[in-house]
Each structure stands twice: as C-alpha cells, then as structure tokens.
Image 1 (cartoon, one colour):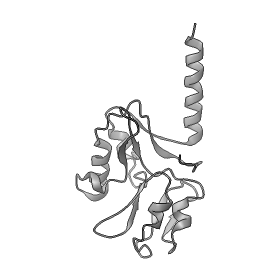
Image 2: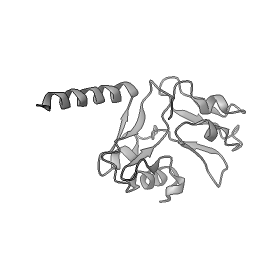
Image 3: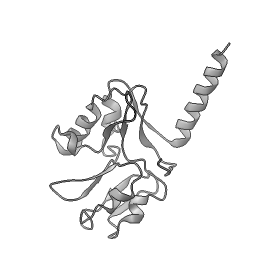
Image 4: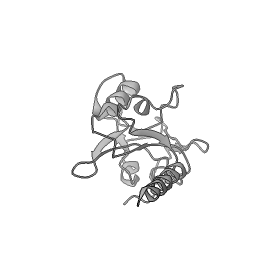
Length: 163
C-alpha cells in the first residue's frame, strides 16, 4: 500500500466513476507529445479490482521519493505547486525514480530516454486536460485534505440516511 502523502494538488480518480475508457491517456499523450498513444501518456488507467478501474498520475508527494532517489539531481520539486520537473540535461534515464515511486506514476520516454512525470498541464490555462476531458468526471484536481473531507462528508451523509 502506498504510504506517500502530499499537501499539494494532484490528479485523483474516483474508481466508482471510472470506466477504463482511457480517454485521459489519449488526451494526455496528444497534449504532451502530439500523438494519440497511450504508452506516451503521463496518466495510466489500471484495474483496481475485478470490476473497478482507476487512473494513476503523479501524487506530488511531500519529500518525493523519486526526487530523493535520483542520483543525478535531475528531478526538482516546485516548493509551491509540488510538481516534479525533469532536467533533460541531467536525466540519464536510469529509472531509479520509477523504482522509488509508490504509485507507478513515472515512465521513461523511449525516444529521449528521459523520465516523464505528470506536470498537471501547468502550461495550460485550463489545467490538466485529463480532468477536463474525462467523460465520467472521475478525475479531479485535489489535495489529500480535500479528498479526506469529501470522504467524511460522504460518511456523514450515509449515517443520516440510515434508519
């Protein structure tokens, strides 16, 4: 079970809404690489259970294990947003960051041999395109505190409905 936590925003998936359509992957790869190729996406859909799917992207962990594990200091975490940036001049594709990531949210670009991590489409005014285009509204940009608060409200709502 992943143990990393964050105070930063990250893309989260509600597995009760996700149908595994992979539109998030296609939109991400088109936005980042100009091609519709799920293997080039920075978000991944995975089977969570026999009938549940979820999507996984960088969780912008505090004290990010990927940043700590990088032997070349090629990964830097923005102290305000938590977004992990890859310095192409320092990254040699060793994949230590992949090993360190509790969420499996990092990949190596097969052409450039550089690590690729979700940057929440920070260069786009309307934010993460995966969130914007998810047809089931399963993806949201949230923080762990916001997610916990939503879960508490859901529990309270269920308690009120019980006879």
